[in-house]
Amino acid sequence: MNALVRFWSSTGPELGRLEKGMVMPSGLGDSAWSELLERWAFGEAQLPAARRPVPVDEVLLLPPLTESSRVFCVAQNYPAHAAEAGGASPPRPIVFLKPPSAFVGHEGTALLPQTSEFFDYEGEIAVVIGRRAASVPRESAMAVVAGYTVANDGSARDLQPA
Image 1 (cartoon, rainbow, N blue to C red):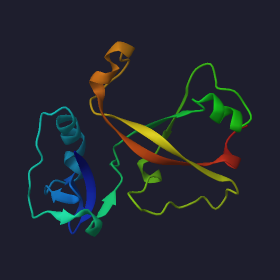
Image 2 (image 1 turned 135 degrees about the vertical axis):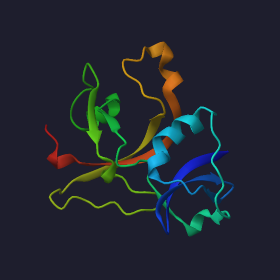
Image 3 (image 1 turned 90 degrees about the vertical axis):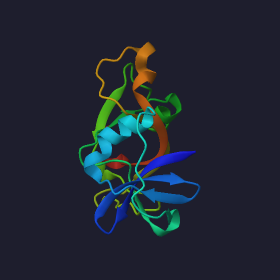
Image 4 (image 1 turned 90 degrees about the horizontal axis):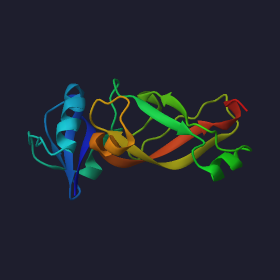
């Protein structure tokens, strides 16, 4: 299995392919991310190899997001989680956005809000949408899914509305 990754290089953020513990640099920067993600995810593109492979533990992996990415989150979508917060799952999903700046890369350090006394975190499964989409019918939804990844979601619970 190989994956598309963003990492920090001497020229700034760069895209590469992660395969068998090695990052294969492409020479492409963030401006190529959205187009490449779509083409890569749906088997329509190969990533060029610009330089020699680098062991993954020698690069700083960045979040798989650029400044133009949008991250949609769904609140209280599991009844047990809603009960932990003292309520019930809402009748319809509560969707909110998180800015790309709220994410860190692999082994990065998250900055906790100083105004919070109850910062909570939880593992999440993130669905990566790889094609522009709007009002997609349920039966066609998988046609726009580029892949999945894991995420560590953090929330200042004491700053959320009750």
